[in-house]
Image (cartoon, rainbow, N blue to C red; front, side, top):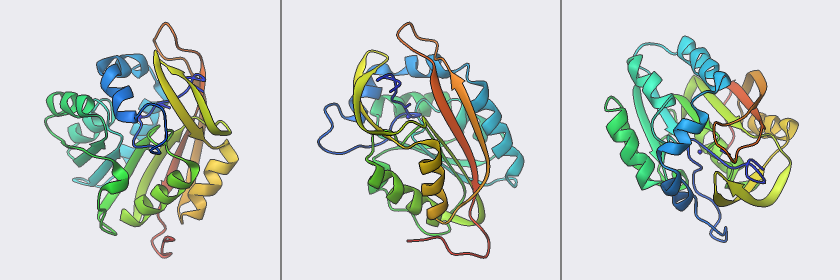
Length: 234
């Protein structure tokens, strides 16, 4: 949920969760943005290409978890249209309401993903497009480990972030005050690999959201896999 975009960064499909001391909860940020978030990022060719790569890897009827599902478009919509069983989780009630109306072929839950029980080996794929950036680095690392365990062996994971070395940056994203934590490209990739995932490909792009206050932002898309023969780390 992206995702400083604000500093200028901050986003996510919507950003999911965040430390209790952050000055504006993620839910409030994305409740305020609503459909404007989708409109600002609808032109991302890199996101569309990432989805195409993921769809090419999935068997028919795959079970997919979309972390920070936002308005449901484009991610959940593309997956559901291809016949997959999609569960979207987002912390914003407004975003979840929009998604339920716009993508009736998927299921959506309003919750903080950190508090959602995830059974091991229960999903064929997991997506987290820009949905970790208001979490601390420790929280991001812990969540990626949990998501990796929730993947079935051989399952696919797609992670996208704004690869900036930010410990705790404050700024404004599309008019909303946010606090963002992020990793550099190398550190983010290493964190993912330390969770037991194999990085199959990395795509680095610069994208400018369609919003009058937006600035160009770096984006990193990682296509990952849980190795079939190696248990992921707890």
